[in-house]
Length: 431
Image (cartoon, rainbow, N blue to C red):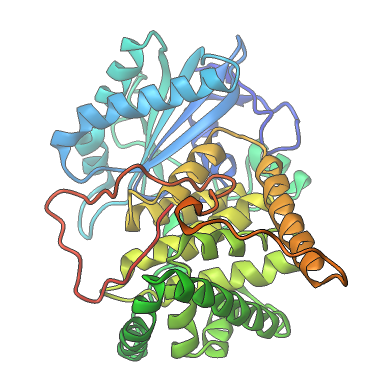
């Protein structure tokens, strides 16, 4: 395989020619911003020279029986998403990335995933988009599922290039782009504690639920909880902002120590209300964004069992702030985790789709700025001397304000079939 490809994506609009499977395999972490372990990655190519376009990542389904249907869904998603962005792909490149289990040769991983590669190639071909290359990357080696020539693609695979030695690495370094470890490492910053403190955090969530759930079910109480949650979140953001960040791992440990179990529980449960969450989403830019992102990450780590689904709110907020500040790889990881915790969480669904489609987050930022400005204007008007009181509507005509931006009400509550909520699950006004 000796096809030429060029990228005008993350490498600051430079044209970079990639020749063959070796350079394609080496380019993958720079295309994604991380090493996508245990993943299917599909990248659209456009034009005669194969310009990189939209890309899609999904964890490899564990059950091979799912592979044909998942392959059809992925192919349709990437192709239709590319069409919505303005151009149908002319070809697609597929990467299957999975490290071997203990004692398993990497070559067995390649053979085990071959039916998945074939299902993806068939699904793309059925939609009249050819697969130019399909690679398996495992344990520092790569294999081509498309090249039959054993001279360039031997059965034992080829060694990956040394990190930082390829043309893509040089271009990324010139553009100031970094690869931030593996997907597994990025996800670990957002996952529950898994320490001795987990039991203490669970007890704090239990106690907060007893006190807060009845209030969340009452209209007057819900507004009070919203106000208290946002005030507490602001105090925590100020506390985090006064502690200078260091390396990611040390920063996470420091942030966890700065937030008590009771404080974390109160904000986590408060964010289950849609209006509260939407107000918190306004902390998306400027000096607020960094402290807010640290807070949402810390809170997602506090959603211990059986409160894992409660992490959907702080994870979605972490994804939104990352996307708003230009960190799309981190946004996709956080939003993907939010949907893993709760596949029906509409806020995360819409943000994830918009981020994957390459939409501009400024549209949503403007909306949230407008909401904040309107709310502050109403406060100023009510507090102004001589301001006329607003006419009170009859109770029968009262309607709740529609959510702004990507949060929208669902027509009916949805629960996954066969799922039983844990007894500690609290009320959530989802969106």
